[in-house]
Image (cartoon, rainbow, N blue to C red; front, side, top):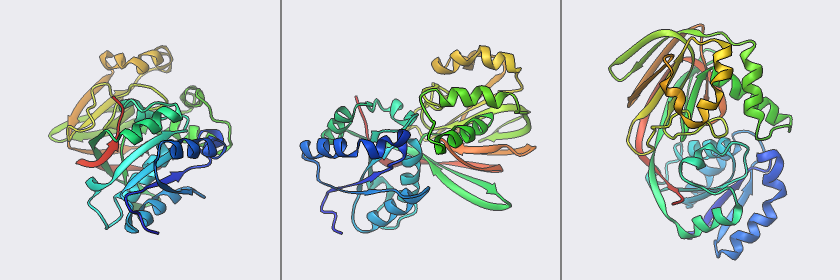
Length: 310
């Protein structure tokens, strides 16, 4: 298993309602036509991409193409940050999107068309971006996870959990996040939260919040419109107690980022974030459901290279 400058391609066959599997022969033919040399492996279970990325980097690969969605990309990032062969900045990640959300790619103009995405990879225009690390609790055990796009807490995490359940049942689609958003509203209650971002502190009843490196989440919602992926800072957005009617009325504002002007929304920017809450708030990173508060976030600045669009 020698790399020789080739790409390692991790394919999630279940991504995008099994588009990863259905479209792989088409994607492989386009990679061949572009003259891209590669070795590919299909993931077989959740978190398999973490192990595959780690194993193949330690075998000498330092360029990885993800054929999947944001969740697969998140797993690969965690593989990159748990290997010992190369500095993480020496690893290059590229994306051929087949997922339902593809939010990370929106910030970097990654096309949804396979041919166009592969053209970007062959052109190799790259940018170095920040990565986040979160420490959290899960069943009384401390855990940690890296993320490349955005972490969501509270209502956002509940919506992600419902969306993931729909995905596992093979029913996901472009509107699955929105449907989960409306169904989650019925049962969700806010939490009393203490948030510290560097030296700033907020105590409030919180409906939902996000800790962002990039701009988009939830299938195209611009939850962090001012986020810059390489400034060494998180963009933290907190929505305090809000009525269910106002949430429904304001959904459109989530897509253009104008919800930041609402009086219930507080924004912060910083390198470190600490969160405590009662009752516990749950967490998702890059759409993957994890544990709960208390939790702390730190930025790992300019730590991974990614292939980007114009």
